[in-house]
Image 1 (cartoon, rainbow, N blue to C red):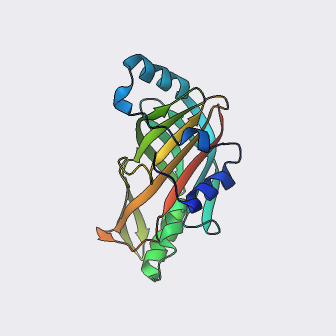
Image 2: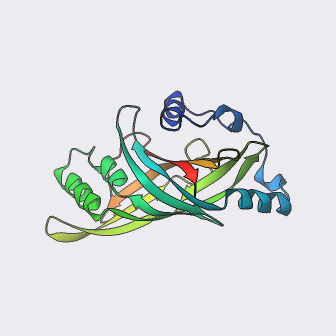
Image 3: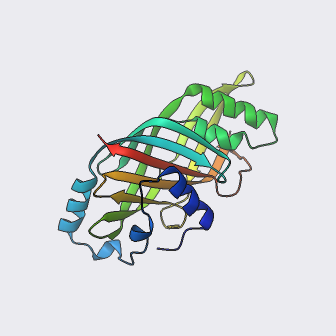
Amino acid sequence: MKRLSNQILMLACLITAAFTLSSCLDSDDDDNGYTNEQIQQAMLSMQGNYTGASVAAVSLTEHDSINNVNWSADSIITVSNFPLSNIAFFLNKSTDSNVKAVGEALKALGSTKLKISYGYYGMNETAISLYTEGRPLELSVVSGGKTVKVKVTFVPYQRIDYTYGIFRKAENKTLILLTVAELTIDDVPVSLPTSPQILLTSKMKI
């Protein structure tokens, strides 16, 4: 796997102190090399429900962290209550007051369901590393007296340095990194901070 930037590695370590990332980020295995039995065993290992935090970040000091976020892993990963304040965090970086107003409207909605597709990048005795790709979010909010459409798309799974997942077998814990590729309001792209990233980190498998 490509080496993560120092900033993202530090952030991952900061908010997931229980993880030791180095041992599971250096696999050169290819998903195509795994047998159906290995893939089924990996899926069974990961399968279940998780609780933890969702963190939107543009740097170590600028982030929005929400606890008590829940997700399940099966053939896809489904976050049942993805916090929209994470998306609002990026919108609030804009200098456009209308964009910020949409961010506040999103935040007021609370949460939504987020689905994440995944495949297997590497496997060893202690960890499973994943390709991940967040499926687009399409939302409607009322801002400025009118209904506006907000769409969020994520960096595709081929960009393994920007979107990936790790499952630590012994601890039954997961880390999932997603990067927002584009955010539009009524089909007009919004200027985003550099590398607007979302980290899902689990405390435990429940």
